[in-house]
Image (tube, rainbow, N blue to C red; front, side, top):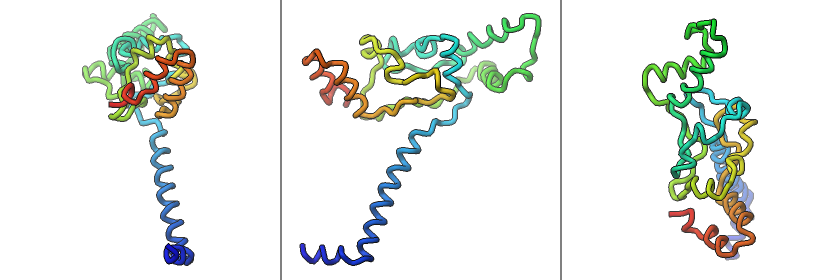
Length: 193
């Protein structure tokens, strides 16, 4: 053991270990940073505008109410509103497609081709985690409780950093007065396969 400490005292060994540790920590920090960058979407989606128009989250993400996954809107769902907005914003004007805003042109192209919009999900849980929106909706949590204030989000991103510690903290806060429910919500198998 003494010999190991003697070797570690040598500057070359010390600096080599320091560089290795810094490389590992730096790599981990970079990996975490990369997961926080919103992915590029096929159509820019400004949540703030849609929230400002008082469109309910469940209108575009109806799966949150009925299924495990909230789902992402189809081109038909988007087009149902946008064609009406275009039609009624100036009923006297028939605006050629080429003069529409670029993002609406992209939407129109997806509708015309009958191809689904390849949205890139931004609220992703790891494969070993079982997450279901239904119990959260049934517990009367607002979408903002988990997803943050979407009225400030100008691109499709998840403003919250969701991880196990974040979920456990919420589960603890929501079950302070119910030890039985608390035990169930803090049990590993509630969220993990």
